Image 1 (cartoon, one colour):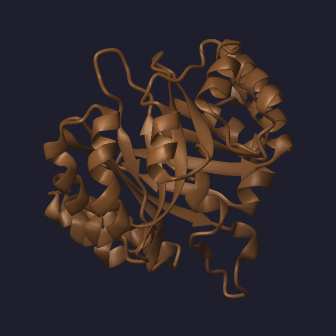
Image 2 (cartoon, rainbow, N blue to C red; image 1 turned 180 degrees about the vertical axis):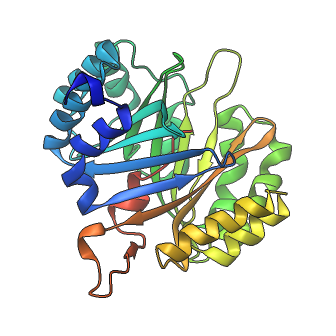
Image 3 (tube, one colour; image 1 turned 30 degrees about the horizontal axis):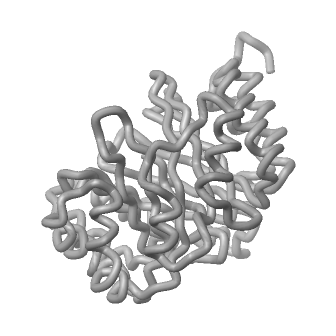
Length: 305
């Protein structure tokens, strides 16, 4: 790409054209100036990401560490997320789905050879025992252009939301270092969003210095009306709620692929709404197909924000 016409957004569109044509996911959060885009793939996606980062002269050492991690773990699926503030790229995140569950000692040993990648959140073995699963299903690594890097683990939990609320949420507060008093606040914030009844994915962000990290819940296949009502209750700008509604209308979506809600030790700390689109499956009339939850989407299409 000629230097005179180079922009990062043009580089992204050029490099990821094929991936985005198959499936691209858009995410919107509290700031109407910001948008996230995500594409997915298998082994070949790493080479495409490398091309984009080389062209854009971004994240050299960090991506070298991600490549080393990938060679050691051999993930079966990758997702690549970019977060934009208008045309300015603010962060990138690479999600890796484990081909099989890993223990905390195994993951710590691998990460020790891939600095600066690390995990400093709750004990993943303790969380796995609480959720009665073999281990986390995947991990995400985030690189911020301002230098704020992080990681997150994702657990696929085979429980209903009601079971999670009654049996697991209180103990999870203790593992996360949160005060037990906010458990019911968390449950109340998301109870109306779990329309399918199934919990699905729980994400845990690595703790920064002086904090306990964050807990992320991602109800899937959420009706747009439920999301708009939730945003109104949380005093989101009415014009922005309408903007999200217009995007959904353009995509002919009556539901969001999922709605991510994030909590820290103080309670609610963020939200994002996600729409996954398959441009290569346009109807004859030219309408866009918005896809609902699939095996891959609830497992790893989880925001790092």
